[in-house]
Structure formats: C-alpha cells, structure tokens
Image 1 (tube, rainbow, N blue to C red):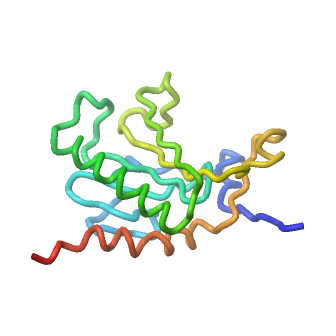
Image 2 (image 1 turned 45 degrees about the vertical axis):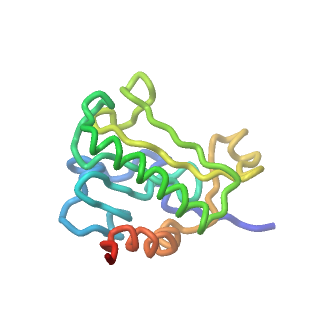
Length: 168
C-alpha cells in the first residue's frame, strides 16, 4: 500500500490556516516569481499562482493583475493576455504533469461559488483517469501525491521562460 501525504492541506481542512492579508492575487513585492507566495508568474497583465489548497496536483490560479470582479470590467488587452496565459498554462501542465484532461473554471460571484468574489480568477485543475478514489467519494478528501513545493519547482522554469523577452 502507498501512503499519500498531503500535510499542507490539514490547516485548510480544519479551518486553521492563517488568513491572507490583502488579496491573494496581489502578492507583495514586484518579483515575477516567489516561492513563498506560490507565485509562478507575474507580468503587467496577469498573475499565475499554484493553489495552496489544490483539488489536484498542479492546480493553478490565473487572474488579471488588476483587482476586478467581473469579465465585463476587463480591458481588451487583459482579455487577450488571459487567454494567452490560459493556453500557456495548459501547455506547461501537459508538458510536466501529463494529465488526461484539464478542468478550467471561472466562478463569477459568491453565489456562483467564488471563494474570492472580488478578484476574478480561473482555476486550472489537471485531471487523470481514475485520479480520485474512495477517499473523495466517502470522506470528501482528496489525496495529492506530490508536495506543492516540488510541483512549484517543476513548473517554475517554464514560467520563467515566459517572462524572458523574445530575442529578435
């Protein structure tokens, strides 16, 4: 029998995780990557984070840099950049985690299930055939086989390449 450890989730499950000050999608500082905040990528339009309490290994969060709650508030450049980043994130997840599929979701408003309703964000959740077992069905607990810091280290080089200016 294999034991799957997900110790970083316990504070979330028990409701004892420290509350984030400010907005999760506006990590402090100006750096493009920050492991402490699970920030994989930041440019002038978008932010990509690993979800600290993932539904599955590699669960990414993609948000516009600007703090806004609704798609109708996005500027054309933000819409375009979000779609470009959705595409890039999917490619990175496929390259490194080899999922059979990827769920992409956007919950607009608290009634629609948005945990952070005032800053719109997409969830990208890699999925594998048979990825959730009896624990999910019986106990509403998901097991994640790779430590979140290892996942961060695995994905980071590709996100760093996205931040590198193209050579003419």
